[in-house]
Image (cartoon, rainbow, N blue to C red):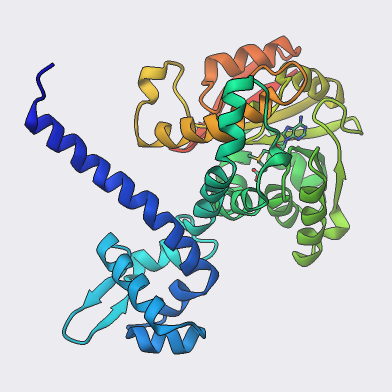
Length: 351
Ligand SMILES: C[S@@+](CC[C@H](N)C(=O)[O-])C[C@H]1O[C@@H](n2cnc3c(N)ncnc32)[C@H](O)[C@@H]1O
């Protein structure tokens, strides 16, 4: 085998970038936890000033800043020996809730590293690893990373893309948010539609506890209820809208879940399914976004599905064609892509 030097150099160059990103991910957690980014976002600072303002040790902060500057995550002024965040860098690192805020994502990635031994074992045994078996930083990271996207799209774009749903919500509708996690989507809908009632369900008890607390903090406890329940047997019926945000593919029996949605939906109700964006063919998903989703799917979503009954293992890149099969096998007759973003497929199913 002859080695093509130019190809090797090009590939190693790519890997240097990738390994640097992986190392820097842990530093992002440090900066997020200690408030370093948020303080830097206020204006240019020396390492001494940043350490003083955040109650941290200057020698550590100086090294962290150098690493951030080398990564292109902060700007460095060599003459003044100060560091600063540009407005764009501040949006990504310091503005909790901005649509491009990344430290929440880094927190979810931390769970992948921490739980890697469990997944490596599962490769050998073929057994699943449940959502609940992950390090809790996954639950918090998922909430922090997904919420800004829901805040930006759900009320303004996704619900209006569904047939007649916004009118029902404005008048007063019954909504089930299944696999609701920490309830970010439930709360955003409850804030927008005060006449409607929102019921969040998830099989993961600590997530439901957090959702209840978050609803109280957001002032929507009067119109929301949260309960531990699996997708195949959550209580209630006659729902005008049932929503599944980024969770159908995590379930072991998504066809069983579809059947239960069909049974609990009002005759003219709607099922909103938000799933990671994917094309139907693997080769069309081999891009930077597909890379992230396939990795998450390997380490989180597929093991989660394999840990439950049936263990269908749809994967996070199932694509619309496969999702249509699952939904129609559950008894739905109408299915369409209502809208999409670069990260999400937004699907509507009707009886
Ligand atoms: C990726 S998280 C999404 C959470 C939330 N919907 C969001 O968008 O922030 C997947 C969620 O599905 C839940 N889940 C997985 N299998 C479930 C099942 N069979 N029934 C109910 N919830 C389930 C997990 O506990 C987890 O909260």
